[in-house]
Image (tube, rainbow, N blue to C red; front, side, top):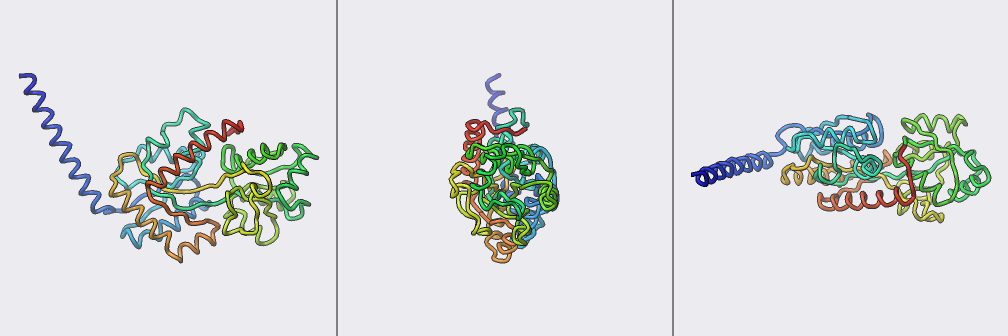
Length: 328
């Protein structure tokens, strides 16, 4: 009697589950049938926000629905990450993230409410931008090597701005200090604009900022770019040597942006969004607009992006612990 009841219960559960799968598949087949929300972890007007909006605007052509960007800044991306991790896994709330939320925060903070691998499904990589060390154009140095030599003569006296503790700019600077065996005075800012103002006014010696935030002042000759924290020279700043080219091989801290979905999001919805994003990022007009903003398009498949995230988590975990980098 009890066994028959259990069998009946299991059969009913299987029927319900099968029906749910059919409904999910149906929803995924006509995805998207309404606007998609793309959550950005930073404030409006910043590099990540501008990149997301340029891509989202172009994606409407393929998706047939708007992709609406919403800003939820805070805690180096953790606020937005938590929000998306808890959203419905239906493909209508996605996370436009950078390296901080998924590969840096988990190393520094063990109490996060999300797991960078388990809480999300990869949708695709979108773009990269490179941290660059810049100084006032009047400063008597022309390379990272020369700045290191000066810092050895004046330990702790050279002030370099960063865009927050634990941010990619901060980690880049710490890696440079470690590789060069020097001590600089890092000065945290809420954003790069005020730091640049202070450099031009003579209150700050330099800044580690991504290319979009320093590009205008470098091209105008008011700031001098000394080194890029990337494996290869940026296609936007091809004349700026990397740290590695100058003898600091470990100073590689490329920032990247990509899209994640809540874990459990239908594969068909992920594939559809990825296809539309890749199509947008291959459009010559969008590519030029991104390059003009200082960002390099870098589309990928969901699988490749998932593998890349796993590699980034492993790399930054090792680098931060081995070099004793701090995020506070």
